[in-house]
Length: 353
Ligand SMILES: Cc1cc2nc3c(=O)[nH]c(=O)nc-3n(C[C@H](O)[C@H](O)[C@H](O)COP(=O)(O)O)c2cc1C
Image (cartoon, rainbow, N blue to C red; front, side):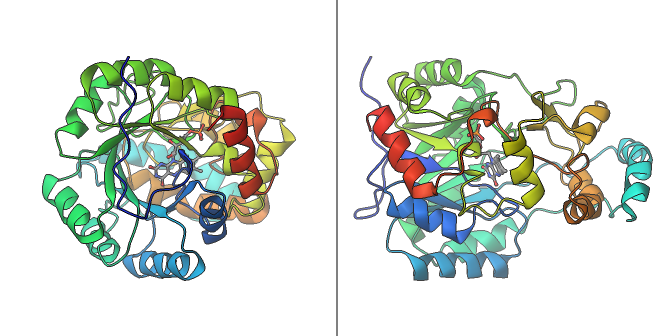
């Protein structure tokens, strides 16, 4: 097998180690986490998801003021606008008792595009080493715009070999492969409502092998990677770098909520599950009551995300681990509270990076 292709980082902006801390929108990927990972030679990511363009701009300025190390950014691509409104209304009705228990009203299930165009222009004014897209095939013009403005390596996320071919067609420089084990939202290009995972659930090592058969682009492997041995296996299978999310969630630098952090460390949960109940897009998290209780939740992102937002905020305030999205990959039992820089150094050492 030929050696994996090198990631085309801009000159002077390559991280020392092929180990990335995944973008984790919603708070976990704090500036402190991005800075600590970068200082340890890894690549931390600033997620744009859910932020306003101004808040994204402020985050990027904060990171650039805090570190000279390379960093990456991540953008959500908007999905279809045609949610099944009757199905969303039925989900709202089913969730009403939970909202009442928490003393809040559900939110309005609106569609939005996560302000993609404005965030692209914000990012174009900064100096990321890598930019990754998730939830779709980026417009080749946007890929070109960001590459030209920032010099960054541009990536898109795929969950199957077929999706790998699709995103490669957009002219990206490399591909983030998200295996079935991954925590958080599944990066399926189109959420197939007939499938619980929104698409085929391909385990990471099979995905890397399958993607290598269909593209020569560099691959970044994500999903369930918690140990040096697992990282080594992904690299040996043909990945050029690895991206870890859950492994960083309990580090002191992460902005993970107290309830989420405690749930990951208590190990009281029996496992993880993929659910649309919280956001209308399949996502893997700890199998709490809300994740298990609504198997028929509709495919309607971001409508359901907006619908449940007040409920989730109230659950976080109340310390209620039953009604909060507790994103976690299948390897969550191996989370540690090590400082992020020590975690990067230890995993790199164990993986022989
Ligand atoms: C809390 C959390 C938030 C996430 N948010 C994002 C995001 O904003 N953008 C993205 O591309 N992936 C996101 N992901 C998925 C990660 O990029 C990655 O695929 C996943 O964390 C890898 O699996 P692991 O958690 O088992 O390491 C998120 C994952 C978690 C756990």
